[in-house]
Image (tube, one colour):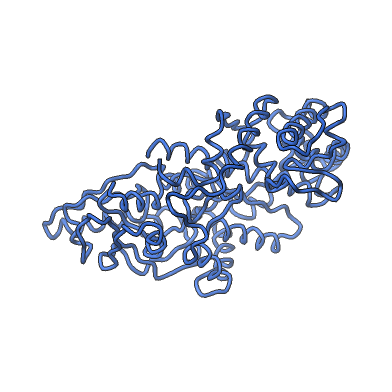
Amino acid sequence: MIWFFRTLFLACLSMAVSVAPARGAELGPVQQPWKGDLPRIIESHRPIRVLVVYNRTNFFMKEGVMRGLEADMMSAYEKHLAKEYQKELVRLVFVPVPVKDLFPALLDGRGDIAAAALTVTEERSRQADFAEPYRTGVSEIVVGGRRSPALSSAGELSGRKVSVLAGSSYAEHLADLNARLKKQRKKPVRIVNADPYLATEDLLEMAARGMVPYTVADHFLADLWNKVFPNLRLYPDAALHSDGKLAWAVRKDCPELRRSLSEFAATVRQGTLLGNMFFKRYYENDDFVTDPTTQVEIGKLKHMAKLFQKYAEMYDFDWLKIAAMAYQESRFDMDRKSSAGAVGVMQIKPSTAAGPSVGIEDVYTLENNIHAGVKYLRYLVDNYFPDVDPAARMDFAMAAYNAGPNRIIQVRKRAVEMGLNPNLWFGNCEWAAFDLIGRETTGYVAHVQMYYAAYKGSEEILLKRREAM
């Protein structure tokens, strides 16, 4: 099995006993098609949905943390928006999709921003609008393996097989090359559409292993992975496209979102302190690239994932939602202890765990800690929120886990006073919580939702990618 699945966090999660099906209602506004420009998104209290492609350099998980160039830049964009809309609840959610689905999902309203190191092309510009670029001068080059014949120009691909992802700029530029070859009465490039759930990094590994003769990648990406796969052969003289621009895409009816992204791009573009820092972190340093034989800290997470699944199944929860909550609580640190006395991965108080509603002693062991946290969450759902909208019960329970159930009862009363729906959290009781408690509880629930959406989408893609390999 390709190294990718042995070294990533979600690969560890998928090794556990079983995979619970996604509850569409739990993702709520994240999954439902919806269209609107930035002011409308803010006014309707919706999350800004960022469409990303799961790979090892732009968006991936490490110890449950969303990492990668696009993850870091979009997280910085969320902070940028929070300063601009200080009195509003601004939240951002990552939605992983295959490359081929990026623009269809954007145009259908299943996302608001496409952020995947996208090269601006004529075809893409006909479909969507791009913000000002954050990186320029990008070359797309042909890459082969040790046994692949050397190339001195892109035209020498005539009659040869090249594997790329459908929907990528590489596929578009290969089609342009074929149009030129046709005019020259030469054989076209034999374009092989790789499995849509693979990533360019996977194709680079496959080229290095002789599984495909050639592929195409941005020069800086190929340079990075050549450090990991020395059998790769880079052909910069065989460039399909030069002086490319990387930018974020939005729908054409979102001029304010485009304006906002362009303003932010100026702070992280090539040559800026922040932009250079992000780029070097993932494309010049070796911190996030690993040898194919290396397994990165998966033992602890694999064991923890099995426990999340065991007790989520026992108490009828989606285990990835429990994992997202545990990450928000403790960053998966069993040694963490709060000033209020909460301990462990689930940050539950020993007194709460030992009480009649849970009845579990010794929450200083990992299994008991996870068991107690999940059982207490079930207690909150069943005893405090049976009357709320079924799709929102988990949201209220998480809020109560954070702030205490009696406080959330007050929040629901405050929602009625504010003319909001006391049976819905997002866009309703979260505003009442913001009024009564501040940002802590609203941010807590929103961030769990953000992690869950990213975990769920990434898990599905990784399982498909594993099947493809």
